[in-house]
Length: 136
Image (cartoon, rainbow, N blue to C red; front, side, top):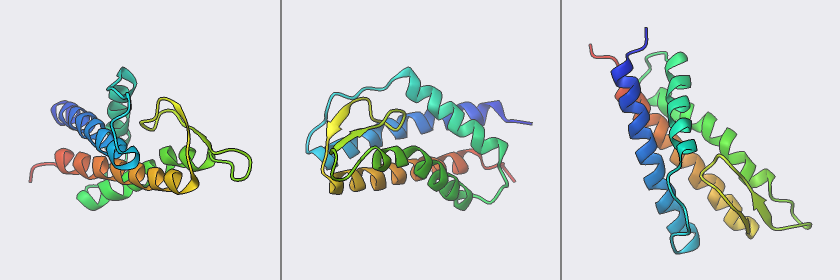
């Protein structure tokens, strides 16, 4: 049975960490904070992220959260790289990965964005595993 209190706490913590890391990532990649704001979609994403983690929870601690975050991070971040068509366009179009607009980017920036976004989601996975860990 799901622990509702831990579910809500993990979801809200994931949401706030995800948003904070998104802002930091924007500054690292672009040198300034672009127009980006927390959205209802990000909050829903955090709740679904935690719910999927809980449904597959195996009790392996933060390592389980790290692996879960890696898998979800690659899934969500892959649009950053697959949206990039070398030789044809430098346009990266992604939605649902902390990106709410289209941008002309060099491939190196797209790769950096992919790596940082995956790392951000891995951190969210570790946070979720730590918060949801049952008390012994």
